[in-house]
Each structure stands twice: as C-alpha cells, then as structure tokens.
Amino acid sequence: MNPWSGNNDRERWPDLAARYSTIGVSSDHETKTSMIDQPDPGAVEEYLLSLQARLCEALARADGGGVFGEDRWTRPNGGGGCSRVLEEGALFEKAGVNFSHVHGAALPASASAARPELAGRSFSAMGVSLVLHPRNPYVPTTHLNVRFFSAQKPGAEPLWWFGGGFDLTPYYGFEEDARHWHRNARAACNGFGDQLYPELKRACDRYFYLKHRDEARGIGGLFFDDFSRFGFARSLAFMQAVAEHFLPGYLPIVARRREHPWGDRERAFQMMRRGRYVEFNLVYDRGTLFGLQSCGRTESILMSLPPNVSWRYDWHPEPGSPESRLMEYFLVPRDWLAADATSLDESLLAE
Image (cartoon, rainbow, N blue to C red; front, top):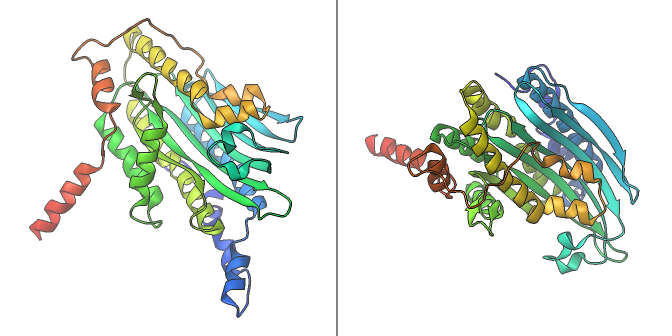
C-alpha cells in the first residue's frame, strides 16, 4: 500500500530544494552559491504544513475509524501552531501530529546550554512532531520530529540549523520489523553520504537512552540536531527525506502486527513500558524541555504522553519470556543491518 496515495503533495514536496537550482543566475560562482543557499524559512514552513496534513490523512486512513481533531492555538510570547490529535481509534489509542512555529526574544536554557554562542539571541523555531500510541501491544509506539531553528543578534550573522529523526519503541520484538525499520532509515540517508546512516543511528541510540534506568527506550532509528553541514538547500532536502521515509517504515509493521491476538498480560507489560516512555519525555527530551522552558502550550507539548500508563515496583520479566527477550536483546543497541552486509559479501564472493 502506498501511504501517500490519493494526494499529489508527495510528488510536489520531496524535492522542494530543487527550487533553488535556478536561483542566482550569475557568472560569479561564489555569489551564485550564496544566493542559492540563503535560508528560506517560508519554504520550510510551507513544507511542514503540508507534511502535517498528509501524515494525518494517511494515519486516519490506516486507523480505519478515528478522526483527527484540530486545535489551533496562539502563543502569548510569539507564534502559535496547530495540534491534531486522534483518540480512541480502531488502531491508535492516541495519535498526535503537531505543527508549531514560535519565536521569542531569547532562547531557553535547553537550547543554548551546549552552544554558548546562542545566548542572548532571539529565535524562531518551527517543526512537526508526531507520536503514535497503538492499542495493540504488538504494534510499536513510534515518534517522528523534523524542525528548523534560526537565531539572530544585531550585528552578527544569523545562525540556523535543522534537527529531527524517527525512532521505534516496540513492546514485543520481531527481528523482521527491526531490520525493515533500519533498512528504511538507511534508505532515507541514501544520496547524502555512506557514513550518514551509521552516524545518525549511533546518535539515536545515545539520545533515546534512560540513564537512570540504564536501558534504551526502543530500537532506535535516526537522530540529528544542529544540522547545517550541507548548506541550506541540501540540509532541507535531507530533512525532507527523513520525513518522507517515516510512513514507509512504520505502516508495513502496523499491517503485520495489528491483528496479533493479545490479552491482559501483554497489556500490563505495554503500560509498564509506556511508563519508561513518560520518564524519558519528562526528564530528557529536548523538545519537551524547550517547549516548557519557552512557555509553550502545555497541552500540545505533552501530547506525546500515552493515555494509559503504569509503574510497577522493582518489576523484572520472567526469564525466557517474550518480555525478557525485549529487554535483553531488542533494547540492546546493535547493528540490525549486519546480516545485509554479510549477504552482500557472500554474493560478491560467489561471483
């Protein structure tokens, strides 16, 4: 199934950066390059709004019963956004897809702590953030975020960067799903350098880690921040590639697992693992911290939290159980594509 079927926007947007290829007709190469690569926040916002709409359309279709409500809001300190949430659907117990574009006089501490050159600058931040919490414990929770920041100060060059990625949080692990997810993540990086997927995969494993539990949140994916290495147009194209690869990575897993039978045991484990999800988002997540520290809209910021969750004191899975296998095998960072490399080597040797 094509997750974007019935919508012409997919053909329109994946190569948005191509619009820059004809800008700056000049015999001076440096001038032309500079004109091509000037940041264009309007183009980013246009893409993000289209992305939110297309994601909601595809996910509502996949759910088969739920409808996304829409809540447009304004931030008193500057900017606003649109939160779209589906609750109690046929597939998703809760699904949220947020767009926000906010600005302010100074970046909060969560954004400037690691980059002291940002202190004292005004900022503009826009992005789309998605979190899906399915009801069936055999269907993983997942997260996507793509964002664009710019920071200005009188008398200084403006600074800008992209960030984002996607990750998968299964409750019951399947190697087939893990390999598919990471093959798709690698495909999102194709054309941007052979080392980009391994780099961003490692960054994702490091980022989505609960230090106080000494365990991973899920099986990872891609994570990037402070990303401007390709110049504006190509960095934008990469952000788009990540966003456009999300549904092809997730929906085939949904199709395989949504009818899997489950009962009280699986539901209890799902809600306990959701507790870990809450812990990460409230303690470590940069987007959550940025939103709260910048006086953002609390309802939209906490949209990512699951609707039902539990904490069980000093709980440990039964040895040899599927729950134990998740903890001991799937939540240990590993190269899920190693088998692909082995198969390739064997095929080359056979030639």
